[in-house]
Length: 192
View 1 (cartoon, rainbow, N blue to C red):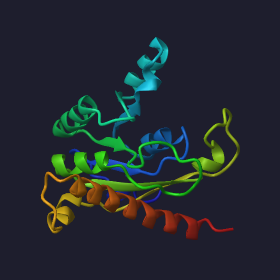
View 2 (view 1 turned 90 degrees about the horizontal axis):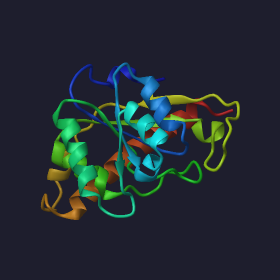
View 3 (view 1 turned 90 degrees about the vertical axis):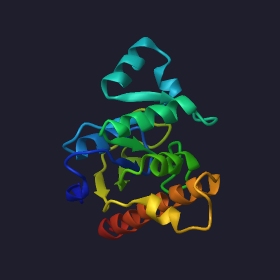
């Protein structure tokens, strides 16, 4: 794990990362000394056993196919209580190692909460447990953590009004940009 010193020791923050594997939330959670909260797709809460497991790890359900007001409210409530929240700005696991366009929801949460955004890049998880696979393959994994960013400051310098969807997309785009910078660093350090 590289960059742990960038994580605040107390207070809320939005921990944003790429997402290529079911392994990513586990890696992010074990990379830090703080307990994290997670947004998770609602289908992971379908059975009683999986729903209980998700709650034990501080995850709450969110509907991905449309704007989920209850999920957004829960996100803002968690951050308001001073707890960190993990969000994957792309909205779902990627089918390859490429970063995708971010969804505006992550930007909405960042702008409305005003908390620092901590970008992260999980390297190697796609090779260890790619989408569609049920078993792990031996492969090293690393979590790269970047410096805190206040995306709200950057958004306020745009020509958009704060209520505009463009503002939230701009904030989400900034997150993906920062994750992409960490990806470049990870790939350079781990080149064979």
